[in-house]
Image 1 (spheres, rainbow, N blue to C red):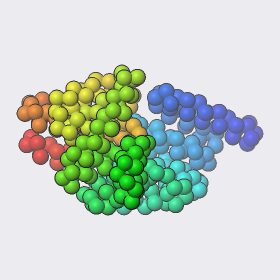
Image 2: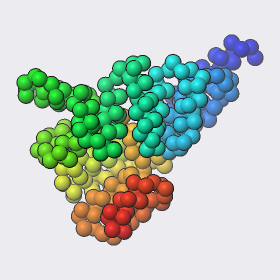
Image 3: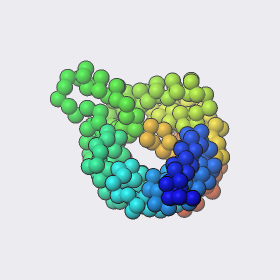
Image 4: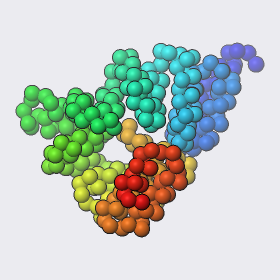
Length: 292
């Protein structure tokens, strides 16, 4: 086979991989992208997509290796830095996450990168820095009138920024403002689950929003649906640039049930979460915080 034919075959395998990935056939997509790499070992984009497959399967360290290989082969692909930022964030490596997101933003400014940077600050309890990052997206710190500010916030396509900005406001004691942002997200996901009744990710974020709003019955109802509609094929779930693992869904349900004084059920679910991710420090801390 000529070199040109090998490259063409690699491209064909890559197209098949993308189709399978979009259909959530992740294991099959992984096998096909390996064939693309076999045809062209220097196919940077194929390594990047292989990383995406590993992320969806919950194999974060394997994904990191793929993104680093893709970056090594072609340091000019902005998406590599973006994906490295997300992967380091999943691993709790905030310094490397921030560094790669900043590089990605320098190469191609994107609104959602500000949201990820805000999340990095939020996760480290740097509330004022997180607040500023989210306000850069939502226009909440603009000098416009209150009515224009509300339009900017309500009309923003960045669900992630709204979701974490609401939590920032809550930490700052601005409960009513926070509820306004959570309510917008609830409206959005209610529309989504109405059109896609089996959308696990929709129910998960509905459950989280209701939890933060103090409606624990609705929170529990939706979180149970998120777990019910989960599939074995996917371990890490993505929705509007936000992500959570199967373990986090069980942990979130445990938190909700603890608030409802359903002690035995809460304990059962936090133990399920830890059985999936036994080395997860956040889950270990949550277990202790819940008193188990």
